[in-house]
Length: 406
Image (tube, rainbow, N blue to C red; front, side, top):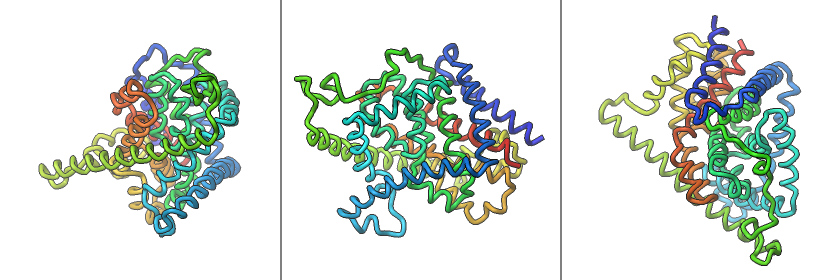
């Protein structure tokens, strides 16, 4: 019976995406069907065969090594920020942008990154039916993190339409960062952490395709390069900007971006705390976490859980959305081995993403520093869709993996 409920849940979560779609007539159902089938096969492969998890871990280790190199530069200026037991959010998640963004800009400048995007994007787009850059971005965000993936894609964002920018903003709610995957696996079952990462990628494409279907013509489905106009990195004479001038602008832009993101995160987290305080004046047991837990109860039940586990799961969902995944992982890390296999799997997969209120602040702040006012305003007007996208991806991923673990 619980398996049937789990399968029903997968269907219901897809139906929610259809119900809230901005343009139901333009949903590409063939593409959706292919990606759902692909994710089911992927979940079966990753939960049933060790080689699948080894592939994901190898890619994760590569991105993590890149982030670790950035800490060398940070430690040169601020050794007491890096050589600590636990780095703070600003040091671990934001300051690496100062190296990662210029690195990817250099790869764009010399033409390497556009070539990689072109071929990876082309291969994925043939399978998924999605535009080339969106397909590549889904892989990029699998390990690089939301703000980093957006930051290194700044040239592309500037040249894409506002609706496509919104699609990438929605996808960014389901990112993770390679540098913290090790922390995830030290707190939760590593098997399901590594399974969740690629499953989230496909589900991000599915959900955004349903919530915000955008028709991209062949002329628009291009990869940005630093050539052809002053707005793409050249001066008004048509000659390419000198390398070190270009690099200096890239580093300066990365620094400004970090400050914008930090300001937005602080504001969003503080406002959420203020709401909790105000709710506490009404009733000491009233909080955003508890309210969201009640709202999420039916969705948690559709994971194929018994009633007792459903209520507990819903509370974990609410806590994750208001705070972050680390808070919940910290609560369950010492007891998760005692959970039933299915509950352990769906909880771990649901937690493996950055979908929460503070991430909204990060994404809005990131776009504010990267694109023009028109594109930024569209994203700011669709905060609800960003949050819905992140929640649906987490639900779909958990339900997909849950089918194969009992």
